[in-house]
Picture 1 (tube, rainbow over the protein chains, first blue to last red):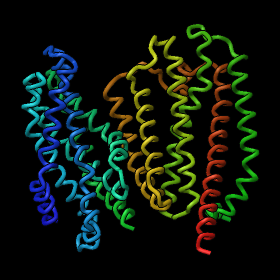
Picture 2 (picture 1 turned 120 degrees about the horizontal axis):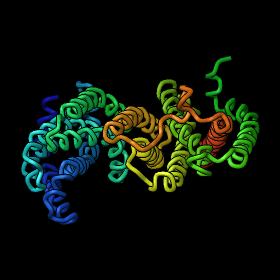
Picture 3 (picture 1 turned 90 degrees about the vertical axis):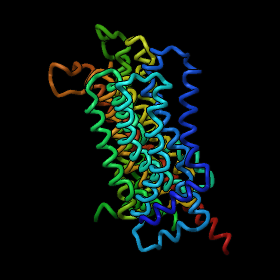
Picture 4 (picture 1 turned 90 degrees about the horizontal axis):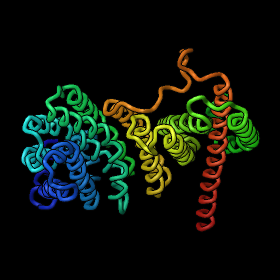
Length: 218
Length: 242
């Protein structure tokens, strides 16, 4: 399992593309929004939590279809399915690799992007905390979506249609935690609910993911 | 004699052929009674005026929109556990029907909301979660359409339905948390002070029964179509081999 994780990380790093791309996308979204809604600081501060979370959602989405597609093309997905580790562990490792290459950079870059969007200083800690707690759920859900559509020729668009509705609870609690934190209100409740969703998704979704891969390899 | 006998497509086709005219006839009669009663024989509400009558379409449609998803969930579970093809096809047949009921509930709600709340749409928890339910239906149907192999499609949509149900419920509560709403509470509360007057409640019960029958009739008819389509495909494949 660790070997698989390391292999995926190495592939992501060396092939270029995936690793920095979603981070760059996140940055571009944060630049485009002020250009669209105008530069007033108060407006931006008001919508910053939502924009940051929607941006994180979309940049996670970008790299989902390559989680299984490349392995499927060169046949290593079949090999992984017959490997001595259970397929559920493969699914969990894939989700972890996706989080390390997409979610973690987002968490690291979020304070900077928050400054761009005029997020109040007291919200920054909540932003980092909510992204750190919430993005693993995004990766786990996205891996499940990628497993559903791995057998399809052009699954990319369908993948977003399937995955985005599943992201709704994570988005609601994540953005709410940041918004409350930025306004100086107690934000522990949404943060705890967010952590609950992440814990549930990370624990249970690998089983659904593995089931979907098995169907697709049949 | 067990319920599982109807999992045999032949048995299902025979029984549903006998059942369908009755269910469809009862649904049509029930709809006619409920809508004529509800639209023409009830008094105007003292605050809402004539718009109160939208309730006879809105509430049953909303009820069936949710029940259709629950039925799909049960049918998917039966397919995943016991591999009865009729079950998977019934889930497939129910999805567009449920989606249309969701749309009907949203549209009638908007038509009522314009004069009453002064807006077509508000980001109220109930409205929002129905919109989200609509998106779930959309994704489910799109996955059925996208996967070519029918058994594979049934498996994948079954898994999606299970996971989607959990997340649909989560979304419902998340949205509740996110915004307090305009929408009134349950239409058929048991508490005497909160519920509608009996002149509205009786036709509403009839309308709900009629919508349930309508759903059953549509799902039966659509499942029969799916089974026939499957048979036709098998026949064509056999011809080609011969």
